[in-house]
Length: 315
Image (cartoon, rainbow, N blue to C red; front, side):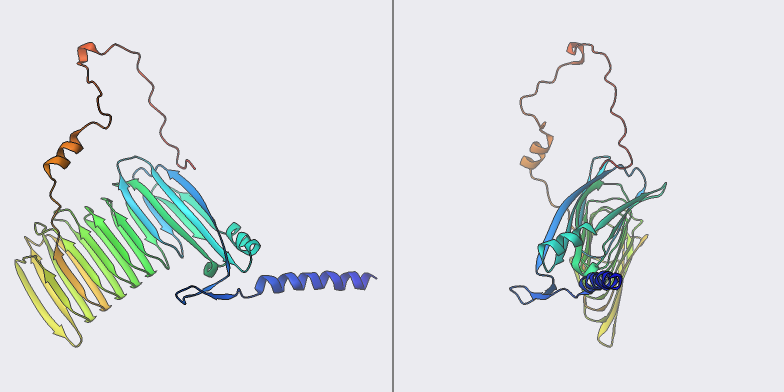
């Protein structure tokens, strides 16, 4: 009898191991795209932190990222976790294994996104961060866009497009398979910009008033410029690619654009004109009809204590 109990227990254990190791079913979308697991489960997680002068780091493996700069002193993230499985129960079980680790020190505040099975999981992140916050992203697969951040921006991706738009003078975007694009809205003369990819196009929109040396190279593709005047320039075709060098202004900064298989495009960025109606609307107070009293008519009140500084993590 004892041996029967041992055999039964062993059988249950083997069944559990077999179930855990079973490969998920291969499925196809309406467009014919292959994916694993027939069922999907997801939830939404909110995170709020006060980064101060620290660099915010996002370290993960799959999903899209979209960050914008704000005038707030806190960073707010909305994270959609998604997992797949062959049944609703399996998908929910995978979802419970998606983890968001938060680690902070004096220099950085880091989010680490992990899962038990990366092929069945993803994290899609949208967020608004203080505009001056330095950003560093280390990702594996997914498109990444950053807009309106003036702090240092560093993005390293393996598979997916990377894009930046804003006034930062230090921007480094790198991807292996995908495009790299940046719109540099500032005329600061201390540019340190690098846009690099192995397989994909590279494009930079640069203010004509900027000062910097621009170097563009491709091993297989074309180099083009549009509506931008260089003080000096040189162009050297090589095999299926080319190298271009140009100088804007005094050449105080440096912009490097490179791809192995793809084209490089350099064009002028011109700030959109503000119409008189838009200028008036921007100057109007948010609450219409509010009456502004002279200082002499404002009743004296006791000072109101200021709110406490946000904690490191307010989630």
